[in-house]
Image 1 (cartoon, rainbow, N blue to C red):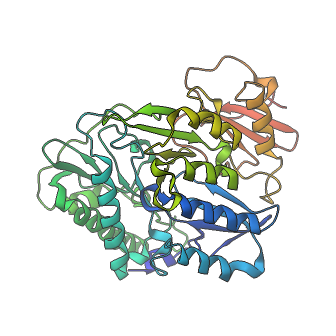
Image 2: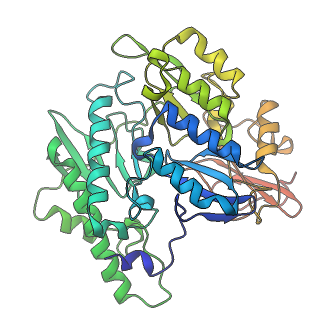
Length: 417
């Protein structure tokens, strides 16, 4: 079944196969559920720092990490170090361990949601089951598993196989659209992935040689409807839960059990060594090796248990992070831009930072009232890499400056910077 990925080369990078960018190698390190020990995060930041001025740790839109600026002669060293840190349990499956989980589970007062320990347990069981199945190494690096809580925090990420808690220990699992008991969730998700591989192979055999690559369930000719029916296997279809979008807290808040948790934004997703050290030290007990942090899909890091709540916000600021609840950094994303990408026409990261420093989301010429909660994505070229899900203002670099428009609309020629 691995042929499903091989039909068109899957270029998603990993820790073993890097993408060669303009600023050096780019390695992506999967963190199932976004979970990482504080000491491990610091070790990765130290490794990136050793690569020189281009080295960097970045947070991705799936709650993973990537290292930029890896020198050509240090790829093997990188892989060895990632393995030593326990982040490479399977060489064959390293690029398919794409599991996103609700990062605030158990930390906010969501009624009926799965607690943090329950969701973390499902993440680990799913990761083990995924890596134990040789056939599932054939998934593309874009196929996504999702584990939500009752907040619906990860619904917008549109996972290919996902689960949402119902009542009384039951879970809704898609794409089949069935209700199962908690112990059956992982098996149901893995069955969905196997079914997708079969459907992808069948579609590839019947399609023309130049057919669209089938990386995800939505790429199937029928959008996955046939796969869903096959996975139900006669079981009753259950309506998908539609909770309102979950909040993404920033700063410090009180957990349901009375303790404190916190989240800090990492501006444009680039994390310094100082930022990593601050997050690791902020956890309960001040033991970086024991602190389990959660990297979110929104370029922030959650500290589930704080040792000193009062010091978190100022400490984050000193480390180049932002833990202010109303920070504009929660609303701004950007691609790599210059000099990291050869296709980029502008240093979008620097320009976005200048805009935020001036209290704006967009270039000065486009400064006008935006709807509450509006977001902005800065792109160095028309490919618009790294676009967020949902609605946002698109800021695209062109030969003559920036074009600004709503996502999905055509740029206005007059909107130039």
